[in-house]
Image 1 (cartoon, one colour):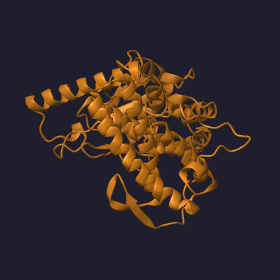
Image 2: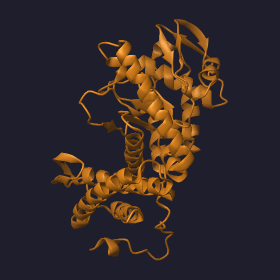
Image 3: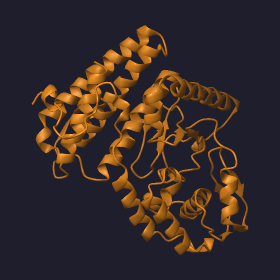
Image 4: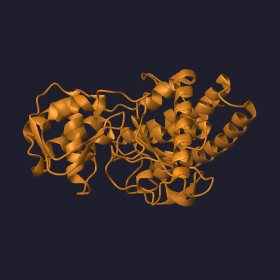
Length: 361
């Protein structure tokens, strides 16, 4: 089946318009349903002395009403399994929930120094007994300078990750200057997106709330990442404004795909063959190629919009768009040639991704 045949509208269904790639956002209903199930099983660390029943009820109610503040790394206590930093993550979840609900959570015991993360970076909490609601109110007392919060020290996630600034062996004046310069790049890039790539930025902000900068460790190579277990979070190096825009779109696409997968697998889980991927040197499972295909379709769309807005030099954008579209076509060929391994949900997802890919053509 050709891409044009796959993109043919299906009768009786609202279809993605060729000129509106940013309007497609998979329904988060299944994701919230799963979160409610996880919240029902969550038991906060006993040392905190929390009334777990009250907090669980509030979390489940928020999930049932699809509250967007739950799609955030501060909920890793229930989305990220394991005991790593469990006390800190349970504490953070309680504070985050208190900041966003009207429920009175009562007292909390802090047995050791902990950190209450907020969009402005947060604050340390010394050992003692506190009112959870007061801590939550203070956490949101000052907002981040933009719609996307920067978490330089990765305090919102409280789990191990590679290339984090908090893990740097040294932090000398040169490192501080590098970090300040990179953060300025991010603020300029995100502001440019918000003001000039409005639809693209809204699509990104629907999936991402926190950006964790990564340290440069491999020369000029950029890096970015995201995880199904850390919702609303992307990790990326900060090298240039255009690279930041691309990385934000790339990882936001993954977050949107994870949302779709919460309802149903997109690729037959029993299919284990691997394929070449335009974004990786090693062979990837078909799901990995699908991740690349979906991300490349949106990266190309962002470059197309950036060209119209003259975000940077036209020659740079045209070169980048051509390169990405070549990669997009490679990924699309592999996906369509192996579409028999897609689930019904996967076929629909690919059909819509083909539409997005055609936008930049």
